[in-house]
Image 1 (cartoon, helix red, strand yellow):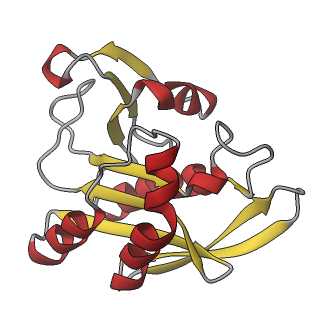
Image 2 (cartoon, helix red, strand yellow):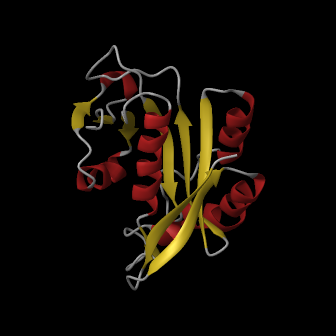
Length: 181
């Protein structure tokens, strides 16, 4: 089980300690009991994501990994990765970590809450994906297809935008290249 300490910011700008860890049943329970109703009522595009399925898939297939970011005894973010089958769209001979799903708790989304309860949840999870890519020997390469509502987030993180991908329903493809040593 992976556990990595992280620091995020409260809505008041105070540094708060968190933990990124392998997704467990308690994280799925937080999603279902605390997040789900808010996502449904606010018509969020990720309201239908099946985190229970993603967690089970990560437990049964070695190429998938599921993580949670915890802070103040509550799940603040979730991420689902594929680590073996994806290749860079920029350098097709290079493997990368592919972010299948990334979500912040509804109260951490600036589109729903001003200021968000915590800031930096998505950024911390994406940085963790880059660290996993380094650990796997992929040089920090990370790719993903963004929901339209999330494109501005990836632009703010200066993740290179490679345009709409017709093979993925026109979703915009973003990819971090290899990190410089």
